[in-house]
Amino acid sequence: MRLVLVGPPGAGKGTQAQFLASHFSIPHISTGDIFRANLKSGTALGLKAKTFMDAGELVPDSVTNEMVADRLTHADAEAGFLLDGFPRNVAQAQVLREILAQKSTPLTAVLELAVDTKEIVLRLSGRRTCRNCGKVWHIEFEKPSTENLCDACSGDLYQREDDKGEVISHRLQVYAEQTEPIIAFYKSEGLLITISATGSVSEITARAISALSN
Ligand code: AP5
Ligand code: MG
Ligand code: ZN
Image 1 (cartoon, rainbow, N blue to C red):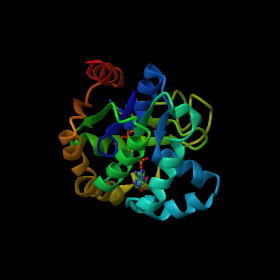
Image 2 (cartoon, protein in one colour):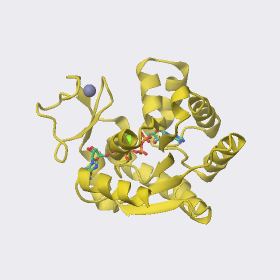
Image 3 (cartoon, rainbow, N blue to C red):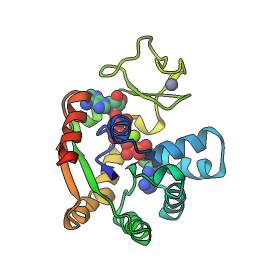
Image 4 (cartoon, protein in one colour):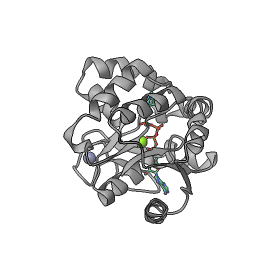
């Protein structure tokens, strides 16, 4: 299974990706997570990405495309992959198509998670992320058993810079302007599957697995 997950910020891509990657035994590749891991370890890539991420802007394609092309050469991606947060504009989608065409391993499907804007703002403004392992929580919808501590690794939870105030609405605008056009692109390629991403996390996972198994 070579899968792309697409949907607005806060649609639940990262949340669903954990379950889908495990169900289909494929690696979960999140460009946002890779950038944040680089930032945490203080690499040049992380520092380069930080300014764009904190402002809710896309990191330049030159940086992102090269990073993904490299990640797809890792052995674990031979059996397939789940891309979360990439591609994020039509130029990236074209680069991905080219990389996969060279290996004769085209995408299996593109799964769109559809959620309305009001729900997105609730999800993003209450999200907390583990500083240690990156796991995502929510102050209301996915509470850890101890406030501000990750159940998985006991790490501290923090609020992403881009989950604060104005940056949320800017990210939604960037999504509408730059990312949404890839939906028409993948529709025309016959790859697009859209599901509703409201309801409980497990309901959405079941919906996704059923849509992808057809
Ligand atoms: P990235 O990390 O990819 O952020 P994003 O796309 O904005 O998506 P999010 O991670 O915010 O949301 P999500 O859909 O994963 O939702 P989640 O599961 O966490 O990118 C960050 C930045 O990196 C970008 O702005 C850009 O700067 C840069 N970048 C990354 N990729 C790039 C690229 N390809 N090109 C250029 N730049 C790039 O869920 C959200 C919250 O909702 C959580 O708290 C969760 O617990 C809760 N939740 C989830 N599901 C449910 C549910 N069913 N009901 C209730 N609550 C739920
Ligand atoms: Mg995410
Ligand atoms: Zn953790």
